[in-house]
Image (cartoon, rainbow, N blue to C red; front, side, top):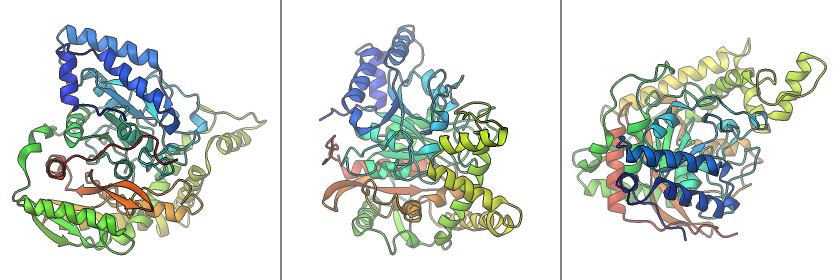
Length: 489
């Protein structure tokens, strides 16, 4: 059994105080990565580069630099650009692409003393809910290797759950941080749209994508957010508003807070054990002095169809740049049109091609008004549902998904069923509001002991409140066991 990492503030303090070195800390993460190669978590690990970076952190710490994450090993989803390190997006078309720059979020973590140990596996171009769409194989859930870790940030969630690293970065377009967090028993935070710079994130849905952390503890997620958030002149959609130190709010408790239970998130199709986990968490909030009441988000049933129009339209536009000409995989052909066709056919997987075709169709002349324009109108209605709900409550609590982790291969033959795995997460992206998933309990599901997480959502810029509520749930829940690394295969 892999020993748990300490809280990252304590880990960094031990490096700054020279009780341990960044090099030995990173070496531990690399050894754990090697020991769990069978889980398929990493697409790229550069041991020499990581150790060089760790030695540089040790030198900076010795010189007295302010390094709040000194020596903390992190994993990074492989759709975030890393300078001189491959960034594939889980796709053959970018198999040999090496960016010349770091994503802003990664640069900020490295400036704070964190060390990237590897790039994690994901659904190709972040399009998927199970990590089975990667061109380089599926990630296995550390709780049960026959089950999906969730998607698209499945590699990042599994890296934290398996104890390889204490922190990983993911991206969330329709639940791609929160659903894997729930499946793998980790904390997952999707910040408000615009809270974290998207510079260096390979775009899927530009009005939906957001970068966020996956961690073992709510406090660790809060610490990472304070470092990666804030304005960036290279991302015009990133807010320049001052970022509060959300770690200061963690111990505030929940007394006096108003918590809403959206009835549409607890109805038909929700596994009873998942519904029970949300009920248990709500009871602890009420016992802590919060006022828990039922609320309604009446347009919830339209979230999936609206999302899969908006997201595929944006994907169609964003992925047009992968043409086999400027960079990435290029097929050999006698003319330009055939070069485009062959490069994309050979380089892109079935799910990515499906979404590009859907989006291109919805944007085409004669269909734009019927699909994209109508989806954007529904998106406005969904946003207004949240705004109205937040007039009477400070936050919402709900399941993160209808079931615990499903089996690998269970939904791959039915794309619609796979899309419905995101039914409880996509609305937050459409509305731009933050979402936090916190592990709640282990349940018996189809013969396996699997984690269930609860989802918290709040108004825009309310991360401090969500983290405060999540910390209370974590503290009153008690410790959960670690996954049995290697599962039941």
